[in-house]
Image 1 (cartoon, rainbow, N blue to C red):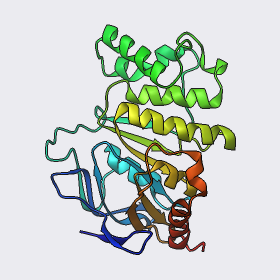
Image 2 (cartoon, one colour):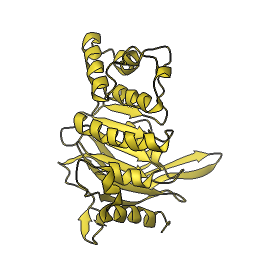
Image 3 (cartoon, helix red, strand yellow):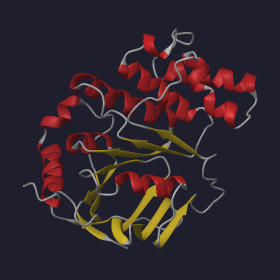
Image 4 (tube, rainbow, N blue to C red):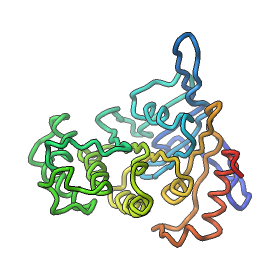
Length: 271
Protein backbone atom coordinates (compact mmCIF):
# COMPACT_ATOMS: atom_id res chain seq x y z
CA UNK A 1 0.00 0.00 0.00
CA UNK A 2 1.43 3.37 -1.05
CA UNK A 3 1.31 6.23 1.45
CA UNK A 4 0.93 9.82 0.28
CA UNK A 5 0.71 13.21 1.97
CA UNK A 6 -2.39 15.35 1.65
CA UNK A 7 -2.40 19.14 1.33
CA UNK A 8 -2.54 19.55 5.09
CA UNK A 9 0.53 17.40 5.54
CA UNK A 10 -1.33 14.31 6.76
CA UNK A 11 -0.49 10.84 5.50
CA UNK A 12 -3.19 9.22 3.37
CA UNK A 13 -3.45 5.91 1.54
CA UNK A 14 -3.32 6.12 -2.26
CA UNK A 15 -4.66 2.59 -2.64
CA UNK A 16 -7.84 0.89 -1.54
CA UNK A 17 -8.60 -2.67 -0.52
CA UNK A 18 -8.68 -5.29 -3.27
CA UNK A 19 -12.46 -5.58 -2.88
CA UNK A 20 -12.98 -1.86 -3.48
CA UNK A 21 -10.55 -1.29 -6.34
CA UNK A 22 -12.09 -1.46 -9.81
CA UNK A 23 -8.64 -0.84 -11.35
CA UNK A 24 -5.54 -2.08 -9.56
CA UNK A 25 -2.05 -1.25 -10.86
CA UNK A 26 1.13 -2.33 -9.09
CA UNK A 27 4.64 -1.28 -10.19
CA UNK A 28 3.61 -1.08 -13.86
CA UNK A 29 6.50 -0.49 -16.24
CA UNK A 30 6.63 -0.21 -20.04
CA UNK A 31 9.74 -0.08 -22.22
CA UNK A 32 9.78 0.41 -26.00
CA UNK A 33 12.68 -1.00 -28.02
CA UNK A 34 13.53 0.71 -31.30
CA UNK A 35 16.73 0.60 -33.34
CA UNK A 36 18.49 -1.47 -30.72
CA UNK A 37 17.79 1.12 -28.04
CA UNK A 38 15.39 1.08 -25.11
CA UNK A 39 13.00 3.91 -24.30
CA UNK A 40 11.36 3.94 -20.88
CA UNK A 41 7.77 4.99 -21.52
CA UNK A 42 6.37 4.67 -18.01
CA UNK A 43 7.52 3.24 -14.68
CA UNK A 44 6.55 2.89 -11.01
CA UNK A 45 2.81 3.21 -11.65
CA UNK A 46 0.93 2.00 -8.58
CA UNK A 47 -2.67 3.08 -8.08
CA UNK A 48 -6.14 1.92 -7.20
CA UNK A 49 -9.23 3.40 -8.83
CA UNK A 50 -12.65 2.76 -7.34
CA UNK A 51 -15.67 2.15 -9.54
CA UNK A 52 -17.35 5.43 -10.47
CA UNK A 53 -14.30 7.63 -9.83
CA UNK A 54 -12.88 10.17 -12.24
CA UNK A 55 -9.09 10.11 -12.01
CA UNK A 56 -6.97 12.72 -13.75
CA UNK A 57 -3.49 11.91 -15.05
CA UNK A 58 -1.26 14.94 -15.54
CA UNK A 59 2.27 15.38 -16.83
CA UNK A 60 4.40 16.82 -19.65
CA UNK A 61 4.66 15.43 -23.17
CA UNK A 62 6.54 12.16 -23.34
CA UNK A 63 5.86 11.14 -19.74
CA UNK A 64 3.82 8.06 -20.66
CA UNK A 65 0.25 9.28 -20.18
CA UNK A 66 -1.02 7.87 -23.49
CA UNK A 67 0.98 4.68 -22.97
CA UNK A 68 -0.77 4.21 -19.62
CA UNK A 69 -4.16 4.61 -21.32
CA UNK A 70 -3.20 2.05 -23.94
CA UNK A 71 -2.31 -0.41 -21.18
CA UNK A 72 -5.66 0.20 -19.48
CA UNK A 73 -7.46 -0.24 -22.80
CA UNK A 74 -5.73 -3.56 -23.43
CA UNK A 75 -3.99 -2.21 -26.52
CA UNK A 76 -0.52 -2.61 -25.03
CA UNK A 77 1.01 -4.90 -22.43
CA UNK A 78 3.17 -3.86 -19.49
CA UNK A 79 6.63 -5.46 -19.32
CA UNK A 80 6.52 -5.58 -15.53
CA UNK A 81 3.98 -5.16 -12.79
CA UNK A 82 0.36 -6.08 -12.24
CA UNK A 83 -2.70 -4.78 -14.10
CA UNK A 84 -6.12 -5.83 -12.83
CA UNK A 85 -9.40 -4.31 -14.06
CA UNK A 86 -12.90 -5.29 -13.06
CA UNK A 87 -12.62 -5.49 -9.30
CA UNK A 88 -13.82 -8.46 -7.30
CA UNK A 89 -16.63 -9.17 -9.78
CA UNK A 90 -14.23 -9.40 -12.72
CA UNK A 91 -15.79 -9.92 -16.13
CA UNK A 92 -13.96 -7.02 -17.80
CA UNK A 93 -13.46 -7.37 -21.55
CA UNK A 94 -11.00 -4.96 -23.25
CA UNK A 95 -12.67 -3.34 -26.24
CA UNK A 96 -16.24 -4.20 -25.30
CA UNK A 97 -16.02 -2.62 -21.83
CA UNK A 98 -13.89 0.40 -22.79
CA UNK A 99 -14.96 3.74 -24.29
CA UNK A 100 -12.36 6.10 -25.76
CA UNK A 101 -12.36 9.87 -26.29
CA UNK A 102 -9.42 11.50 -28.09
CA UNK A 103 -8.07 15.04 -28.50
CA UNK A 104 -9.89 15.31 -31.83
CA UNK A 105 -13.55 14.30 -31.98
CA UNK A 106 -12.86 12.11 -35.05
CA UNK A 107 -16.47 12.20 -36.20
CA UNK A 108 -17.19 10.75 -39.65
CA UNK A 109 -18.20 13.68 -41.85
CA UNK A 110 -20.56 11.61 -44.02
CA UNK A 111 -22.61 10.43 -41.03
CA UNK A 112 -25.10 12.45 -39.02
CA UNK A 113 -24.39 13.11 -35.34
CA UNK A 114 -26.83 10.37 -34.35
CA UNK A 115 -25.16 7.93 -36.73
CA UNK A 116 -21.73 8.90 -35.40
CA UNK A 117 -22.82 8.21 -31.83
CA UNK A 118 -24.18 4.82 -32.91
CA UNK A 119 -20.92 3.75 -34.60
CA UNK A 120 -19.57 1.55 -31.72
CA UNK A 121 -22.98 -0.13 -31.41
CA UNK A 122 -22.92 -0.88 -35.14
CA UNK A 123 -19.40 -2.32 -34.91
CA UNK A 124 -20.35 -4.48 -31.91
CA UNK A 125 -23.60 -5.49 -33.68
CA UNK A 126 -25.78 -4.40 -30.78
CA UNK A 127 -29.57 -4.30 -31.31
CA UNK A 128 -30.14 -1.31 -33.56
CA UNK A 129 -33.49 -0.14 -32.21
CA UNK A 130 -32.31 -0.08 -28.58
CA UNK A 131 -29.00 1.51 -29.60
CA UNK A 132 -30.81 4.25 -31.49
CA UNK A 133 -32.95 5.01 -28.43
CA UNK A 134 -29.86 5.04 -26.20
CA UNK A 135 -28.03 7.34 -28.65
CA UNK A 136 -30.88 9.85 -28.44
CA UNK A 137 -30.82 9.65 -24.63
CA UNK A 138 -27.06 10.23 -24.60
CA UNK A 139 -27.29 13.19 -26.97
CA UNK A 140 -29.87 14.68 -24.65
CA UNK A 141 -27.58 14.06 -21.67
CA UNK A 142 -24.65 15.87 -23.33
CA UNK A 143 -26.87 18.78 -24.39
CA UNK A 144 -27.16 17.94 -28.09
CA UNK A 145 -30.84 17.10 -28.34
CA UNK A 146 -32.10 18.56 -31.61
CA UNK A 147 -28.77 18.04 -33.43
CA UNK A 148 -29.30 14.35 -34.22
CA UNK A 149 -29.52 14.96 -37.97
CA UNK A 150 -26.76 17.57 -38.15
CA UNK A 151 -23.39 16.86 -39.78
CA UNK A 152 -20.16 17.30 -37.81
CA UNK A 153 -19.16 20.45 -39.72
CA UNK A 154 -22.34 22.14 -38.51
CA UNK A 155 -21.26 21.83 -34.86
CA UNK A 156 -18.68 23.81 -32.90
CA UNK A 157 -15.55 22.11 -31.55
CA UNK A 158 -17.03 21.77 -28.08
CA UNK A 159 -20.26 20.32 -29.45
CA UNK A 160 -18.30 17.81 -31.52
CA UNK A 161 -16.44 16.68 -28.41
CA UNK A 162 -19.72 16.24 -26.55
CA UNK A 163 -20.88 14.04 -29.42
CA UNK A 164 -17.63 12.07 -29.11
CA UNK A 165 -18.29 11.56 -25.39
CA UNK A 166 -21.80 10.30 -26.17
CA UNK A 167 -20.28 7.92 -28.74
CA UNK A 168 -17.89 6.58 -26.09
CA UNK A 169 -20.85 5.77 -23.83
CA UNK A 170 -23.21 4.19 -26.39
CA UNK A 171 -22.19 0.58 -25.66
CA UNK A 172 -22.38 1.12 -21.89
CA UNK A 173 -18.66 0.57 -21.16
CA UNK A 174 -17.42 0.00 -17.63
CA UNK A 175 -14.38 2.25 -18.20
CA UNK A 176 -14.02 5.48 -20.20
CA UNK A 177 -10.53 6.64 -21.18
CA UNK A 178 -10.01 10.24 -22.28
CA UNK A 179 -6.77 11.36 -23.91
CA UNK A 180 -6.49 15.18 -23.87
CA UNK A 181 -10.12 15.52 -25.05
CA UNK A 182 -10.20 19.32 -24.67
CA UNK A 183 -6.64 20.06 -25.74
CA UNK A 184 -7.64 21.44 -29.14
CA UNK A 185 -10.32 23.80 -27.79
CA UNK A 186 -9.91 27.49 -27.04
CA UNK A 187 -9.54 28.48 -23.37
CA UNK A 188 -13.13 29.62 -22.79
CA UNK A 189 -14.66 26.58 -24.47
CA UNK A 190 -12.32 24.35 -22.50
CA UNK A 191 -13.52 25.88 -19.21
CA UNK A 192 -17.13 25.25 -20.22
CA UNK A 193 -16.31 21.68 -21.23
CA UNK A 194 -14.74 21.05 -17.82
CA UNK A 195 -18.10 21.85 -16.22
CA UNK A 196 -19.91 19.76 -18.84
CA UNK A 197 -17.51 16.87 -18.22
CA UNK A 198 -18.33 16.79 -14.51
CA UNK A 199 -22.05 16.98 -15.23
CA UNK A 200 -21.81 14.09 -17.70
CA UNK A 201 -19.68 12.06 -15.26
CA UNK A 202 -22.21 12.53 -12.47
CA UNK A 203 -25.10 11.63 -14.80
CA UNK A 204 -23.42 8.53 -16.27
CA UNK A 205 -21.73 7.18 -13.12
CA UNK A 206 -18.86 5.84 -15.23
CA UNK A 207 -15.30 5.20 -14.13
CA UNK A 208 -13.19 7.72 -16.06
CA UNK A 209 -9.43 8.14 -16.49
CA UNK A 210 -8.78 11.62 -17.88
CA UNK A 211 -5.35 12.51 -19.30
CA UNK A 212 -4.37 16.18 -19.49
CA UNK A 213 -1.44 18.59 -19.72
CA UNK A 214 -3.41 21.14 -17.71
CA UNK A 215 -2.55 21.22 -14.01
CA UNK A 216 -5.61 23.23 -13.02
CA UNK A 217 -7.80 21.01 -15.20
CA UNK A 218 -6.42 17.92 -13.46
CA UNK A 219 -7.28 19.32 -10.03
CA UNK A 220 -10.69 20.63 -11.08
CA UNK A 221 -11.88 17.37 -12.66
CA UNK A 222 -10.27 14.64 -10.60
CA UNK A 223 -11.48 12.87 -7.51
CA UNK A 224 -7.88 11.62 -7.52
CA UNK A 225 -4.84 12.80 -9.45
CA UNK A 226 -1.81 10.90 -10.74
CA UNK A 227 1.32 12.91 -11.57
CA UNK A 228 3.73 11.50 -14.16
CA UNK A 229 7.12 13.08 -14.80
CA UNK A 230 9.34 12.96 -17.88
CA UNK A 231 13.04 12.10 -18.19
CA UNK A 232 12.82 9.29 -17.12
CA UNK A 233 9.07 8.71 -17.15
CA UNK A 234 7.83 7.75 -13.72
CA UNK A 235 4.82 8.10 -11.50
CA UNK A 236 5.73 10.71 -8.90
CA UNK A 237 2.50 11.12 -6.94
CA UNK A 238 -1.07 9.87 -6.58
CA UNK A 239 -3.44 11.58 -4.19
CA UNK A 240 -7.13 12.20 -3.51
CA UNK A 241 -8.56 15.65 -4.25
CA UNK A 242 -10.83 16.57 -1.38
CA UNK A 243 -12.87 19.36 -2.94
CA UNK A 244 -16.68 19.55 -2.66
CA UNK A 245 -18.95 18.24 -5.38
CA UNK A 246 -20.37 19.66 -7.54
CA UNK A 247 -17.26 21.63 -8.48
CA UNK A 248 -17.64 25.31 -9.34
CA UNK A 249 -15.33 27.82 -11.02
CA UNK A 250 -15.13 29.75 -7.74
CA UNK A 251 -13.19 26.85 -6.25
CA UNK A 252 -10.22 27.70 -8.47
CA UNK A 253 -9.55 30.75 -6.30
CA UNK A 254 -9.67 28.82 -3.01
CA UNK A 255 -6.61 28.07 -0.88
CA UNK A 256 -7.32 24.33 -1.01
CA UNK A 257 -7.37 24.34 -4.83
CA UNK A 258 -4.13 26.34 -4.89
CA UNK A 259 -2.43 23.84 -2.57
CA UNK A 260 -3.25 20.94 -4.89
CA UNK A 261 -1.95 22.91 -7.89
CA UNK A 262 1.23 23.75 -5.94
CA UNK A 263 1.73 20.09 -5.06
CA UNK A 264 1.68 19.11 -8.74
CA UNK A 265 4.05 21.95 -9.66
CA UNK A 266 6.48 20.70 -7.00
CA UNK A 267 6.37 17.14 -8.28
CA UNK A 268 7.06 18.39 -11.81
CA UNK A 269 9.97 20.53 -10.59
CA UNK A 270 8.20 23.76 -11.50
CA UNK A 271 7.93 25.39 -8.07
